[in-house]
Length: 260
Length: 338
Image 1 (tube, rainbow over the protein chains, first blue to last red):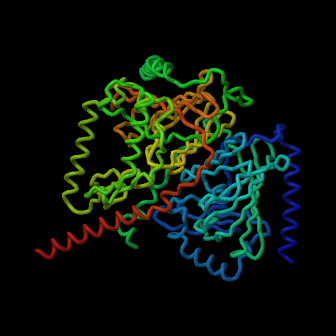
Image 2 (tube, chains in turn yellow, orange):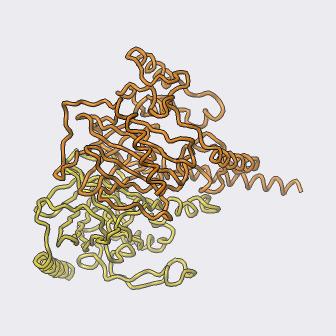
Image 3 (cartoon, each protein chain N blue to C red):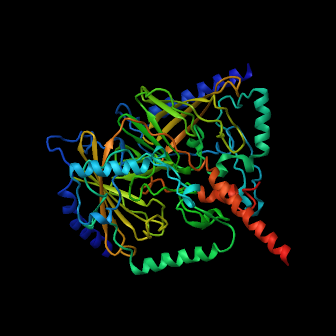
């Protein structure tokens, strides 16, 4: 009940915020809007989707650089509705996070995590396919605007089918494997994950990003995250190459590492 | 300045090489995007049994006749379909017959005897003496190193140090399969999807999902201190051709290319189902002269699949574990003798 009330308030709040944004900003006139560009989230959701305080990081040798940055959270209603067994797993993941997080291993981050990692991503809006190229791990998605049918197999970045609802790009993401996490705090999902993403231009340089997350094996009900994404407007904005495999190899295979 | 002048020369020199042989359908015009540029989008494949370099026996014979194509194809397919177990390295590495490869069953539609079109012998020119000496020195160091335990046969088929991950080759580490610099066919996954947005052309390479994001907005290359495995591409349109100029390489790519590699590529729609890909490798400190090649890429209906090579790289882990165990055992034996 409390939850429901909270969600309703938040929903109301965000709809007011967005209407105001839309009224103030300049929403692109073309339809569908062109989302091509370099974008990035500006929050600490990759540390933890839920509200979290600052805390020490894994390596005190690097001082403040290694600390966990605090954040007010991006989950509507505040909490992720884990089923009891899954809540225990999440607790264990949190305990193991400095070795078990797939980000350490330079694995493709899955959806929605790829969106709010602390790296930019580039949307290239083609005629019937929209490519999203992420700087982290060279991860990439092809969003098919003409539904080619079901995925041939599960994958790290899933199978993305897109459509326009007014100015909003809606992407239905299925067939992700169960190997990715949502954040560095151990929030996780199963292979039954179903994500519906919504990208709505607020003005030429801001997209409102919403992702509804459904996974009956892990969560008691669908839940939602939302955050603005900002366009990189710097003159020299571009994705740089971040092949992180070399940075993960010592952990994965290095002296002692591989035999553990 | 000098480099710009050099690359202009390369353009001038290579243009006629390409012009005479490109298979073009003159009655056909490329579809266009709202910005007026040709629409290069689609899923394209460069799989072929045409070799990168012309077999030496063919000398300066640049094109097959129809009959020669039939004979060449039969020989190539027969060879591929045989049991590939030949003893030694072949029995533990890449002992695959044609079932495991995806090179297709056809030579390129341009009927060329090699992908390399210049020099006229269809072969990659020799490395410069300095580059040869440098690579020989590196190879010798590996040979000396591998007299001790802790080496394994890498994807290249050569014995390489394997007790540290960074000592293994890029393919074994899933970093790059060399299918981007330039875009040449490999054992499988020879598919590329082009998506075009305003001011950018992006190419998703199915092989280890390397993505090339090519700005066509007139922006300059990254500063020279930044080095990237697949280079820094910048595109511009010359008529209906997308010309891509890449620099800022790491020098760790294949075939002896070094940091000074300057790759020039041309993409032209020449028919409803054909994208002509032409490239020039200009690397004056690595090669005694620049060389060029071309591949008419064919449109394919199949979609790209995710090749999560690193995520599933059990082979890498096993190679390192084995090499470490090998070293440990040798150390224990040495200690026992004392």
